[in-house]
Image (cartoon, rainbow, N blue to C red):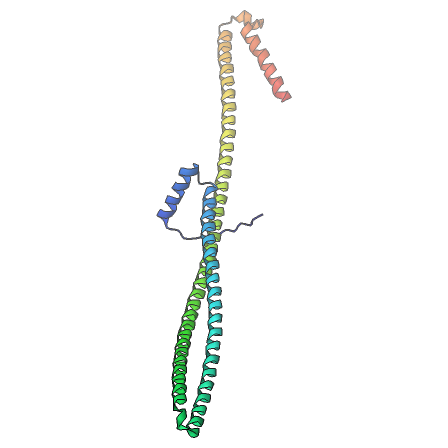
Length: 258
């Protein structure tokens, strides 16, 4: 299972708002999709940079191989040059010997001088080749230094991008936590409101019952006031008062039971 980290990062507000609008247009909500889209962007960025780094490393290896070949060629040219120098020295010695032996060998000496001149030209060409090889080696070394710096820059970019991703993850999780807290608070408020409504309904029912009993008592008082003295003396109460008394006793019994 991948681990997640929480990070905080500064982002241009207009750019962030456009990013949120784009996610809402595509998914209908930013919930969860914000971090998903950020992760996709980071993965694409890292994949491209890693590929560039690998390509650069390959170039460096190729350049190193080329330098190695040039160094070997350079060594071969130096050996060839040294060999030619020895040959020239040997030829010069032979010419001196021929001069001592006979002037008739002048043609041979002339030919040998031509050979020496040719060898000297070859030596000059070898020197020129050596000089160009040295220039190529220096140029390749500079290219390697430049490529190594580019690789280091790309590594730093990847490292910074990972840090930015961690900051974004941290900010996203903080937003999720805050949203969860708000949902819990809203649920508590809703429960309190429903409880208060139930109590209000119960109070209203009790008030309605009290008003009904009050009407009955008012009616019963009127009936008693209209009774004659004999009816009062003999306790001949109207049926409404008897029912009211019976209802009161039942109510009292119910209250005692509760």
